[in-house]
Amino acid sequence: MFRSGHLALFTPEVRGQSRWWVAALLAVSVLVPLGIPQDAAAQIVDVRVLDFNIHRDIGAADSNIGSQPELAKIVNYLKPDVWTINELGGNSSGFNRTTAHDLLSSFIRNDLTIFGPAPVEGVNYFLYVGEISDGFITNAIVSRYPLLETQTFSDAGGGFNALRGLELALVDIPGPTDIGLFTTHLKALNSNNDALRRQAEANADKATISTWMSSHTTAAALLTGDFNESEDPEDATNWSGHRIGDPLPGTGEPYRPISTLRSVGLFDAMPVSIRGDNDTIDSTNPNARFDYLLYSGDKLSLSSAMLFDTGQYTSGQLAALNAANGTNFIAADSAGASDHLPVIAIFTVPEPGGALLIICAFVCVCSRRPNCRGNSS
Image 1 (cartoon, rainbow, N blue to C red):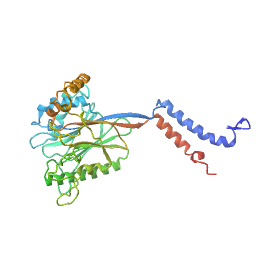
Image 2 (image 1 turned 120 degrees about the horizontal axis):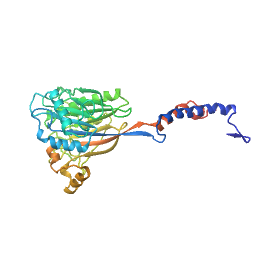
Image 3 (image 1 turned 90 degrees about the vertical axis):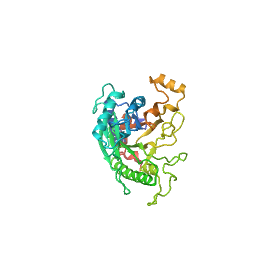
């Protein structure tokens, strides 16, 4: 910037270029007083997501209420920000959504500590109970963050009626990135008809989630639930006498319900226990993985994931866990809570922060300056 030993700041050429630099500095000067740290590239939001098939512990007059103390103990220890629930209901037909909602809300108020003392629904926690049931059970979503929208989508398809639906809650986490949280509970059991229906439900859920993601491009997506199948090569397939990829009778479609759900662009969190095992059922002797946490990797970063099973801790490990956390777990607690083991993951959601805004402002200004794009002369 020197010519013949003189500062060339005010030559006509430099005066034109300087206007762009002044504009960039002005952009920075506008952002700095907002109190945004200049050295912070992002505000980090961590979200703890729990999926737990609760084996009808809550939701009806004849629920397995004797398991509620163990259930509460586990949920309080895991401290989820959002909790997806499968098998909310009871052991007799005649499921009532209002009853299920009220009993779940009562359990949260009276047995959980994670939402503070005397939590109030709609203030300290938010709750959505699915609107489709199989007559016995449905799914539900609990969150410490507000729910911007909720909906139950039909999982009908392949000639089958809807079973338990696909539940959605758009969770308003701090910052501009919301999470579209889906949960589903695919058809159980192992017959040909069960496999056909499970695949049909996966196809229906895939189409719904894909459409939703296309219309909510700024939101992250999570899919959780009990898929009643494992595609892990070491596990036996739930479809009796068959393997993953076998053609389904009547349709010839390859049987891959988990791959179908993942194919919308979701990653598998793959939580494992303290022993490194990922099997979630049966809780007394887990030998297959039925419960999943799938996420959109472009919007969420997986920090950690865990399958929690008190039965897999040694006595020394369980004593250390209790001493460190003020808990009183015993080895039988997980099996006492449900026939499924819970899976939890912590996701990091990077939100645009001060430095990122400054860079964007500078790039915007600089992009209008010819020399920032290269000299074409």
